[in-house]
Amino acid sequence: MSIILQTKSGEFRIDAEDDSETLLFAGLKAGLTLPYECATGSCGTCRARVMRGDVNDAWPEAPGTRQLKRHKGDVLMCQTRARGECLIRVPAVVDRKSENAPRRITGKIDQLNRLNRDVMDFVVALEDESAFAAGQFMVVNVPGLAGGRAYSMVNYEPQTDRLRFVVKRKPGGGFSEWLFGEDATGTKISLFGPLGKATFQPATDGDLIFITGGSGIAGIMSILEHAVRSGHFSASRGQLFFGVRTLEDAFYVQELAALAERSNGALSVTLALSHEAAPSNTHPTSDLIQLSGGFVHDVAARSLATTAQSVSDEAIGFVAGPPAMVDGAIRVLLGDGNLPPDRIRYDKFS
Ligand code: FES
View 1: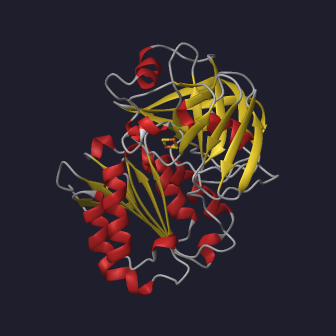
View 2: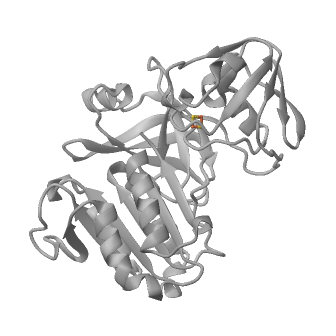
């Protein structure tokens, strides 16, 4: 069905495959640079206004709807589907790109690994190969579970038919409860992506500073793998601050130690323990992982206050985590890290 998007840079006509495709995904698939961040109803960035036509809102109470003027026809494009021809006003400058547009792909859950009591990672074997930038994510849909969930890729390959994702168990979280509750191996799932702009750009990025918590480490693992593999740390340095509640909650410790080792000392990794004092200066299993007590943004602030003068002019800050953590970490990067706003890339999820 035909949809006209009226933007600040002109009108675009797109086609939604069927009435299950959201306005956002139909537009992104057509190569349009529509505004979005989470793609799953949380942030409100994909706000648009229905000027004509009938639409279906899949999640009227989504957190991202708080700022919408419902009485004027405002909707979230990531939650709205056209029921027929419609005219949608998008308050943004929009271009059309011809390369690497996101698309729908299918795959099967192939491997599940329990990382600790409430974190798991899983691999999806795709039906065909896909390319993505380190730091990007996919929206995952499972048959029988309403709505999509955004997960960043943990692995990095320029082209691959296997994607690894990490999931934290959330009480009442449909997808995580399902994954933790039964053997999901072999289940066919649908993905849309790659999405997200908090990506590593090796040609122009300098030193890398990461602040994250819990499953936010996923996309950062992908960036670190790409950075190590591309030789980025031969000329630049990296600092990772990874927040968990206790030492027992930490995961990917051996993988992070291996990345630090492969960086030849250019990457420092600090685990910030928010709910217990650090039992020692380094992790019991690796001297390459430092330990510090406190919330991750406080630990990062203390460290950056002494190192900020030595980071390169092209330094980039990456932040991933729940909205409150991301906002705190951005303040640290702007203040203690002395980074300008355009050198901070973040991924908020809830
Ligand atoms: Fe639609 Fe975040 S992109 S609410």
